[in-house]
Length: 91
Image (cartoon, rainbow, N blue to C red; front, side):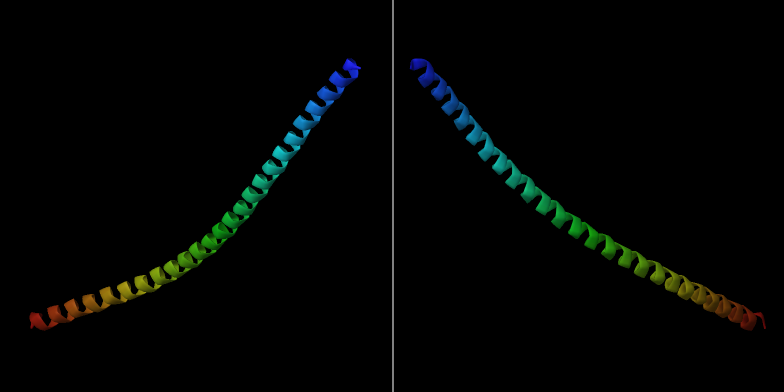
């Protein structure tokens, strides 16, 4: 009888350990799920930032082209004014 009682006690201890392990697995699964949600949020934010950076790069490059044209026109005007001044002071 004591043999059976000892065996039942060991089974009871093993079942307790098993239930504890299952509860730990549930907590770990919840943590993993939470981390996956956080990763999805970070991925969405990163995608948004990438699209905003692309938009800014396109705007910057178009402004650069416009400013380069204005600068060239300004140098042409300045050169023409210097040429006119030299022409009038020559006489």
